[in-house]
Image 1 (cartoon, rainbow, N blue to C red):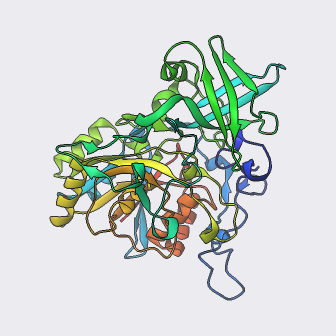
Image 2: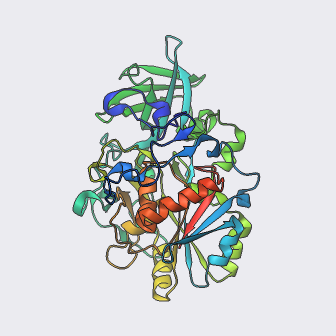
Image 3: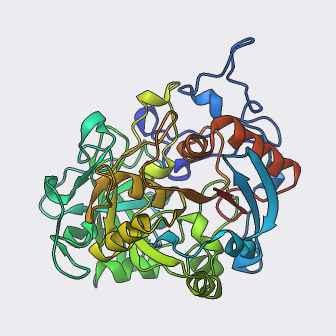
Length: 434
């Protein structure tokens, strides 16, 4: 069995537009066990993609969420002792201390996947990524709007520093989606070779999607054509964009469960999955312990799940995704750091925002785009503990986990999780690295 990673479910254009997946043998995800990248008798080259490979029995991929959000298991990894222990997700409370800040990504997944037919009657599929900026067809999807030293840092919206007004407000747009045209979108399409500019896909009575431009990276610019508010059309006709390794059709239950309980800011095409385990009760009990829940936003786009096609990680372009950290959130984080509390990032997306906005030693409020690719060796400035799900082999998400925990410990923990029959990927179990 081959499990396809990323967005290849909706893009088979070929060349740069062909999004491939992790190779695997029959019933296994991945092409080698932990340490397979090591040369004979030598240490692995951590810049090589193959250093982050592992084998996973396909039956450990969770096709559906647990019966209850907090019924998942939790693997607790001590990165200083090099040890790990099995627990249940509610046991997370035992590892949260008074004064800690638990940082969650409150981006909301929108129904971004559309199925329809071309005028010939042939089926077609479109995955909306993000709306295009008003008056500007240049997209941030390829990372061209994120700039900073080394190309890996975040840039404020509008190309300058993000200023902060009083209270919780930012000077400038609160979210890059606020200055976008909701009818014009960057999208991935299938079949990519057929859906060229000028082609249309009829999704339903009252909604047609027209391809109006194409990009070198294989994505398209599309226009939503229909009566009524574009967001209402999206909510009415779109489908939950489940990852392609979940080999089933989406259903109504996914609209709730492929969403965190604290989701608020619409904009993601994939869930920040580490947050799927939280319930309102667990969040309340965290605050009762004297810790803070701090919200930020990163809209999960193509960058998070874009497959790595280069052999060397240093050659991979992660792509840019939009984020927002309010002044109130930045203040709470700085107070936590000043009071010797820990910053606990819920998910790799929260981690990337925190690391993107803390280069000065303090957390700076702002909104913009980040294409920060965290890979070994990396010195973490902002995050003290990381809660995350189990990720695909040879993925940028696993690389981030390896940078935080250490590659050898991360792969040992994954091997333990496989042996202990943990459930993997978006609807799977969780891991706390502290």
